[in-house]
Image 1: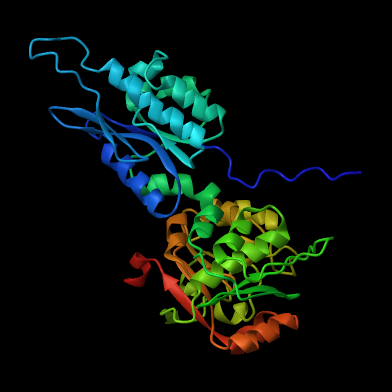
Image 2 (image 1 turned 90 degrees about the vertical axis):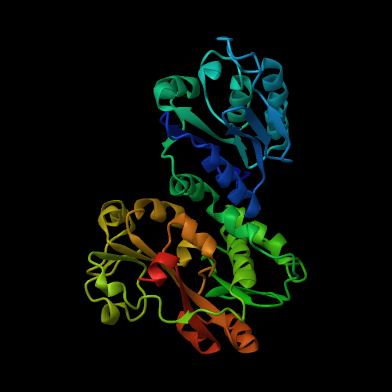
Amino acid sequence: MTSSPLPPASPPSIIGAVVYGPDHRPESLLADFARALTQRGFKVGGVVQETTDDDMVLVDLSNGERLSIKQNLGSGSAACSLDESALAQASGVLRRAVADRVDLILVNKFSNQERAGRGFAPEMLAAMTAGITLLTAVPAGLVEDWRAFTGGRGDLLGNQMNALARWWSGPRLYSDLAQSAPDEAARRVVVGLGFTLVEGPHGIGLARTPSYMPSTPRGGWSGRSLADLAGLARSWDPFDLAVGMAAINAGINRFDLDAERSNGLDGLDQFDPLVVIGGFPGLRGRAPNALVIERQPEPGQYPEEAAEWLLPTAEAVAITASALANRTLPRLLRLSRHAHVALVGPGTPLTPRLFDHGIAQLSGFVATDPEGLVACVAEGGGGRAIKKFGRFVTLRRPAEAGA
């Protein structure tokens, strides 16, 4: 008997539309968002619009080429000023983006042209059919037409950068982290009972080893680039995911990382209610009133199912970094979107990228004794055992750092 295939590792296709009023055109917002994603390593295609009193220009996001789509019909003309031939040329940009299977296709807007099935309507439908994530802008007066066009799929978004960041972040969290890994060779990969370790030239990364172990031997990791190993974080295989997350952390949690020395739970007792995902050692002494959620709850703790009720109303949420290694973090972040969220544990990637995913505080581990840490992990050492081989540090989102 053959096992059923795992679901695809790539994030699902998503559709988003920025809703705007007549005085709040989102052109610069969409361009800034595309630029930010490109800088993070994502492949963005499509077009954004620049409008002035004299012209309307579409900018090809793949190469920066500019195409005017406004005809000069003279001051007395009441005819539509859109240049249909230029629009047809711009549609080729969108078709090419679909063929290239970019991470995001951005279309400047859904207008009366698309409502009537013209303009960029065929290309937008082609992107949806191909399973490529699509983002556009929709005038408030055309929202119902947009719903009909998409069959009710997709999200309506506010005209703000943080709304776009939240929309993008959930399905793309692991891809975003993997994009940060450097093209440097992994020196050692060690799989212990407690942690999986990857050592790079400038740091060591840890991730919780899953209880699942592969039925066939794995190996050949040492010498591969951290960027290559980091790609395993997109996998649905728990073992591959642990190696991928450890590789990501090896590139991020560098030996020379300058950060605040502190325990990740310090100061969280000021929040009420405080919900903690995972039974951290010494928690009761630091936050005696915390509501604790555990997979195997002890008396006084809550089961996993309680997250649906406790997290949406929490003032602060502390989440164990193991949630990254078991793929529960995106769901927990969605439930905690109104809370101050801290990601805590040796497997925490100490990168500001995670601030854009709704996390306010990152508390993780930086190795100071590589040889000692490698030996400890190889012998099955857990969280308490590794402490003497590194330092626990905290990064805070800028607003929190200045509070």
